[in-house]
Image (cartoon, rainbow, N blue to C red; front, side):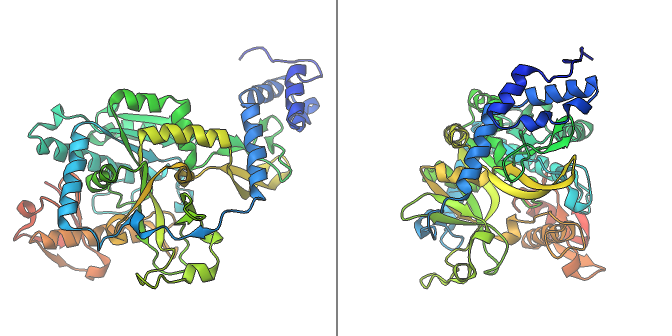
Length: 483
């Protein structure tokens, strides 16, 4: 350990002056009670903070709270590709365009994986979680194998071996809590069949937690309380870690971005990618219809007359707006739920990283924060992935079916919704439909509504190419169908 910075009674003068400039000198309030080692830790902790940036974020975020938001309007129908409007010809064309872009190495995949499975009763990263499928595969493994399947489909499309096509590069954002266990999990599972050099881990940032008057909350007498900066921290993390340059160097033009806790996520979906390229927009999102007016999901809206597309949380929609019906379509006026399945151009990611940093507006989440005074009510400062959308010059929404692409794993079994059990059943039911459509049969000793079969992602990405495996064969549920 290096020499303690200060054995005397006073904190380092220059650092104290800098803290005073930002009204944060209370961080040194307990200096006299600290040992030389603890004083050293406190000084290092304060020196690690970018004080001008942190101060700008706190001021801009507090200031924006009082400002009225622009009135919201429904997203125009012309911005949405609905399932019923899509023709088979369009789907096939988009699939081919997407597969071509993948085989050319133009697609990167970006996973938001900063969360722990605390609500699932686990301290491991969420991606390590096994939702109880017959295969016992973790969420990370299911996603890795979907990438492997896509690489094979892309190789077959140009009559090459997968070794000679460009591998899909997988960027995985962790947090200080999940970084090391995530890396170890991948190493111990030999990257689930992917090459180690096609996976890049990077960490999202942290920001000091603050009191209601904007002062730092001290977690201990020698450490400022900090929390991860939200899944929207991905933009500044990509910029500061120079990964946007890394992507450009690899020839990546499009980024498929998703959250770790969706057991049915179609990682790098060629149809969505082809649609994205075809429409020429800067940003796009997959959406599902709200199940019912008061469902607790954020929805896409337009801010102001002709304004940008953005997301409002369910808490911001009053019940009359949430229940309003569009008389022309028969749908809810605000029906397009945000499910964290996004596509961005690399150019736009560069632009939004700069824009969000310049504006420095974070959401204030009021929480009980562990501190030297016990649990203190204060704020964690976070950005959300959807904060990017108002910066997009053009945005398109792509409707998908909930039962095919959205199986969230957020709460422990026994909760009312979004549990490992509910996600497992959604996977088994979808894969059962694939097998029956491919000419297979099922037997089962428990009721069929409570079971089904699992199709390995290495066999099929979205239900294709199963006839050779399934036609005329009988499978006893629950089981996993592999090659």
